Length: 445
Image 1 (tube, rainbow, N blue to C red):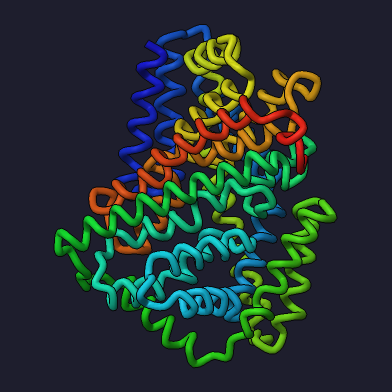
Image 2: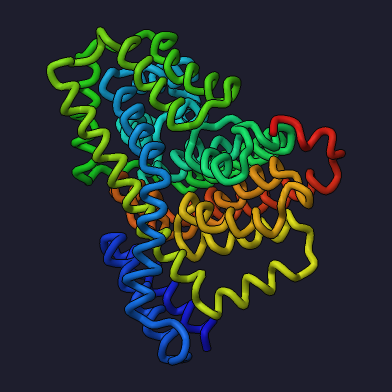
């Protein structure tokens, strides 16, 4: 009965999110449903008031406090790359080099480089969206595939690469005491494997679309707003691509070579961006822009934290604990147990970063350094948190909304790129750890 109620709670959350209901209302409703049904099925167990007022809010608050500076400083850095024109400069350079004859590779590359350079995936979306609209129109490609191209670049192989400054690669460092390049060789090989699958899938998808005769259709306000923003951006001087890349390269270098705390690295990146982009910034508006970046980070953090609260509540449910213990004591390889546990929690909570903050402490206590290489755990949990992204994930909902399409139109390809292909890549990584010698897999930790 407990498992049935848990599944029903997930369905409620999924349906509400897909319907466009605000994430907090959706999560709170699903949390309340799970708390009440858990109490009804086991009156001596979880008290609904304690579940909401203590467990849920503690989970939300703990995550908010632990990752406040990473989210806020990351958002401010992304804001500076946007308002200075640096992100546009990098994206335009890449697209210009590839040319309109290679629309899809150029857009995928632009998204990937921005994401690996430390630009928030939300900022990267707004940076490349206007160019995507323009190039999709010229190539007569359907709008519904814009989200797929975006996720192919910013939400697949680049997110699992060792050295990435994205939150999925930073959270394990905090709990496991590892570096951003942990699991270097398996991570790079898996990223290359996943990138290959992504390229083959997109090639097949767009050949199929071209053959069907499906093309661009005008008709949403977002496109008009985007084109207006693009025209305004063209009138503003932008830094040369080399100058634009300098703060991003500094961020990657300090994070991966000096191995400083991610929050300190992001602060240094902000200072360098203020100096290097100085002539391209409107200093009269800089305080307002920094405040806007701060609020964007806080909103993104809050939207993730409310999911973490849901995950914290789920963890206290007898049905979840029984299932988790069954997985943990299944006798499977520790890395396989880790992948299954994290993947399940990601799908349940709808947030990769949120699931990591909940799952890693449990996994680290079960598999200490004496049992499993912590660098291997780091790379596996990073891959696992990107391998079971559900349709009610906050970023997916945001991307579809910005692109002016619905789940029914666009989720098929997006699901292939954020769920099906990553699951295959997860299996590939586990295979690598099974066959490669330890002297290779421990590199980069």
